[in-house]
Length: 304
Image (tube, rainbow, N blue to C red):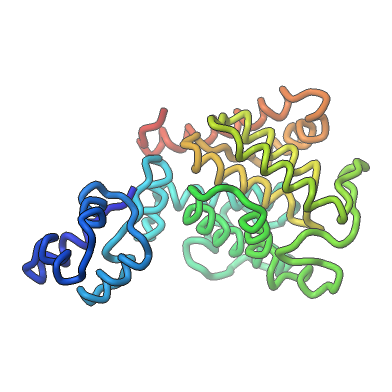
């Protein structure tokens, strides 16, 4: 859905109506009707109207999601609202997701970096921990921006690039930042997809998932588990996988889940045993959904 509040205000400033706009620019009646209904216009029409009114296209046409949580995140992100859902999601998910993967930064240190964009953390913290914290903030921004797009390999690779670029790994010739792994790897002694098989396995996974007409939280948990079984990247799979799960929850109007670092042993057990016993991972992720619900309740945000 599109909000044309900016366009309405710009027309009032110029003292013209939609009919005059249509006549001046040669817009079709269908285009004018789309504006009235809040339907998406073509990029060509948007640019033509923006140029005529001397306004930025983004000012005239604002995307509005039917998902209240996603819409709130976008609004708070745009105005950089402190202390709201966007703020807390950034801090809590970034801290927990990075700490699960071995980051030495505490939640308070993570919060300090997000809130002040400065570092005051003492000695002994690897530079990559700081870089990947800032990168994770940007990755969540990216997820919020593109949440409603169909999940694709390009989106998943972009998330990996955002997380891993400029880190120590990016200086290694064999480490493919923003692309699938070049060397075979194992997780906890378990075999993962070979480099030559990754694209085929990812393509099949996304095809099956994107064909679903109704997506449930259990479907997203299954997507996450199978993604981790493929383990498409040399490193960073856990963080990317959890970001993908966040994106898909926002896409399908499902309350997201945050896996807390304190629950990582249950989380790892659930992933390891997924193909034998699905209940363990599902229960852990639903517990993470309860964590998100508590945050919504704390901030007095309505949810289903």
